[in-house]
Structure formats: C-alpha cells, structure tokens
Image (cartoon, rainbow, N blue to C red; front, side, top):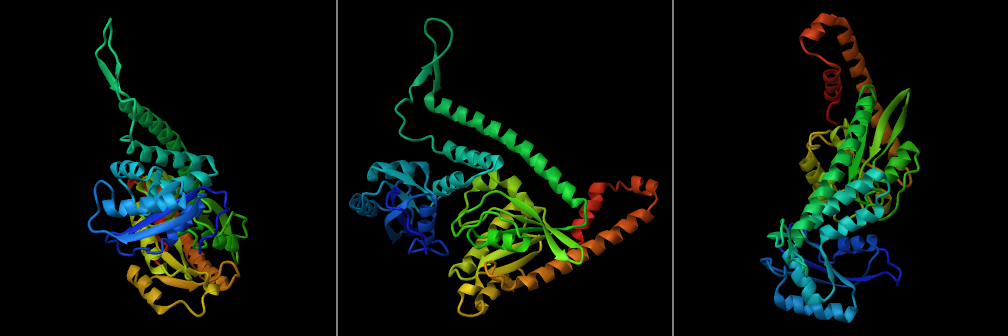
Length: 410
C-alpha cells in the first residue's frame, strides 16, 4: 500500500497501458510507490489496453485527448507513464498535455538521484542521468541555428547548438567514467584483499523493498538505513557476519532491483553490482507477502543474468512471513524450482527474527565447508615444489579462483 504524500507535494497523474507485457499492473500500484518515493502526490490515474503502440503518442489520439481532460481536472503538475517513452513520444505528449511528462526510466533515475548518499553513488547516478539525457536531445530547442565559424570576415557554417550540447554531454560522461573506473579499481582491490582469506563471501540481492537491509541488520547487528520504501538504500554496505565456533562470513547489502530497471543504471552501477558477481553465495530476498512475488523473482533473475551472476549459488529467503496468514504458498516454491532445481529456501521474518537461527546455521555449515576446502588447498600448494609451481604458471590469482570454485551450489 502506497504511503500518502503531504498535501504540499507536487501532484502527478499516472498513466499505464497493457501493451502485451507478461504481467500488467492495472492498479498502477508500483508506479504509485515510485511516484511517492520521488516526492510526488498521485492525483489520479488511467489504465487502458493498446495494440499496437502508437509511434508518435504511445497511446491513441482519442485516449490522449481523454487523459488531457483528466489532467486538467486533477490540476496535475506532471504526467507519469509506466513505460519507457521515446524522445519523440515524450515531446509530443508534453505538447498535448501542456505539462512535463516523465517515463518510468526518468522516474527511477530521479529517485536514485534523491537517495544517493556516497560519492560513488552520486557519480553513478549522475552518469546514468547524463546517458539518458543524451538520448533526449531532440526536444523543442529554439536555438538550433548554426554557430558561425572559420577564419576571415565570413566564416563557414559551424556546429549546431544541439551538436555542441551533445559534445558537452559526451565530455562530461567521459570524465565521470574515468572517476568511476578509479573507484572501481579501489573496490576491486578491497575485494581481492577479502578474497585472500578463507571467509565465505555472501551478497544480499532482491527486489526493492523486499527487506534486504532489514535482513542485513538482523544478521550482522549493523545499523544500515532501512525503510518501508522503494530504493531506501543505494550504496553497498559490507560487514562481518559471526556464525559461531570461530566461523565468519563477509556479508554485503546491494542495491535493489525492479521491473524494467534502466540499462543505463545497470551500466553505471556495475562496480557496485560486481559484489554479487564475485560472491560465493547470494541470499535472494523475496517479499513473501507481495502478490507479485513470483514476477519479482523472475525480474531479479533477469538482472542477475544481465550482470553475469546467474551461476552464483543462491538461497531464496522468503521474508515478511509474519504478514502471511499461513505458510508460503506452494505455487511460489514451484516458481523457485523452475529458476533453479537445487535451490534451497528459508522462511523468515527479518523484522521479528523468526527463522533466522536456521539460516545462520546453514550459513555456518557453508562457512565451515569453505574453511576446510581452503585448508586442503593450502596444504596441497605447500607440498608442491616452488619450481613446479612456477613452471605450470600457478599464481595467487589462480589459487584464489580455486577457492571460489570450492563453494558448491546450495
């Protein structure tokens, strides 16, 4: 259920359409949550069915005219579309409605910009926004005449203003990429340092607002920010997880995923998402109380495939079971079974602590297996003469890779 925004917040009219997607959202519940997270107050919504998509207006001209009247009646300051619009569609719709139009991508980028706290997070969001803006340079400019150039009394035609704008964006994007590459090298060095040990590397992933940060705090006794809202945290937080009997693991809380996550964000947050790619184990947190839980599982798996983490072993964590009337429905476990036949699952409530002891016990077993495997490999390397190790090209990096492979799928 979306939380109500204060009356003084800017109002927005929400628009969605069933254009043949697998799981349409007629009530626009997720778009409503996104609007509230962006500081907007939903002032009405419209949902329709459309086949095919209009290349100029996304919806038909008659539907657009109807929405225009609803926007005027609601006195909305902007219109939000639960879809990615082309630059031409956005420009034409703004002309029709007389107010600004945001598509789903721009809305998610706005939320990320509001929530970014660390220097790296701000750079990542700025890079994603600039990449998105670079595709929007077809707007109604009034200064597209060419700049006069050349040498002499009369110069030849110079660059158009839109070309100058594009070049400025490209230069800014290159600067941000260089700064992020430097931070990425630092993060990679930190990961290699952790990898040299024998500790289990665990990353928490999942759909946004599934309770990842709450689970992270419950397991590590940390005080990471957690709230009942979309994308409450963007920055990766890493803490040591004590599992008893001298066993420890390194636990990382990563950014949440969402349906139609903008590709520019995936690219910009690649350094952060590498925590999941390089992990020995993923704790895939699912909001068991959400009616769209099955679809959210599939969306997370899709993003994991996109970043190259689909082969990392997983444990499904069905969170918020305290909000259910009974156990997790068997149909959802069948969905999980289709994703990975050997996957394990735990029913927990990160808020109340229910089921966390069993999860800790399982993580302790995996940490113990990792430690034993590391000891065996260390003894094996010690028995190999130094000249043999040099001749076959074995390196510390190779030993590290062997440690990663020693963790078996859950």
